[in-house]
Length: 314
Image (cartoon, rainbow, N blue to C red; front, side, top):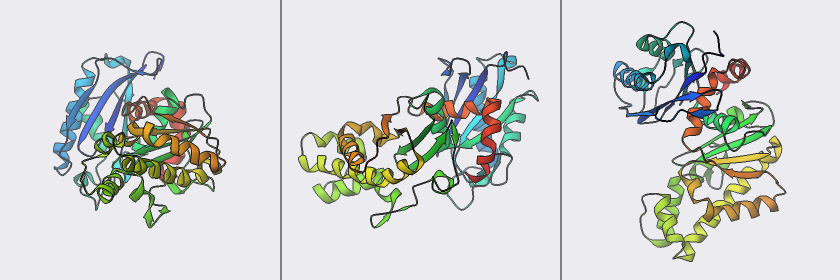
């Protein structure tokens, strides 16, 4: 493979009900303008239907690429999944179950008619977000970073020199923190959208569809601002021990809740300072594009060689 010529990759983000794909210029570390394609996906459909939607979406991106310039395709993919062999292991959850046992890499390669030197590679979605930030975003140039996504769930990843750290005494197993004890439950119960909407109902007696709606009320009602203050203090107290243990130089936040950082950020920063944690905090500017860039980076052969030992543990 002549990687000097093959400087274009396709980055793919598989969401719960959609697929997004883009062409990425590996030399410039950027998404090629006008290359984005998105499609809704019925995650309960048969495998053939899901794979057809995915491959049709990728074909839209391929129309703007000369095939001899294509290095391969990288997927940010939720698990369980065999990220080395490209085989779906999702079972017992109501999404993509019909793909169980399917070699997605081979299926996509065949449907697209990719040349034999075009690889299809996979990594989990939280790690892809973090790698994108480390390669082309806020964490570029830092040796050790932690990334969290705050939204419907609480995602996390720890990276050292862009490589996910998923074992050892510096990080929780698989680099995941969502399941760790916090308060009267686990972290995912507190650092997610459902905590905000539940707490808003407790404080005001009213319902809110999401964090954006709660945020709109914060400037008018001090008790709503207190919800954000409490969220920030709790998040900092939970993350500080892990940030210090790992020696994270920067913490990058993404996800819908991070858009309200102006409301909870001061509480996070004050609480981290009290905890003796000097990790810098940054809010993702790449947002959803971080996972697309991170998945595209799987086609950097040096990175792929370095990340493979971590993939079976994700």
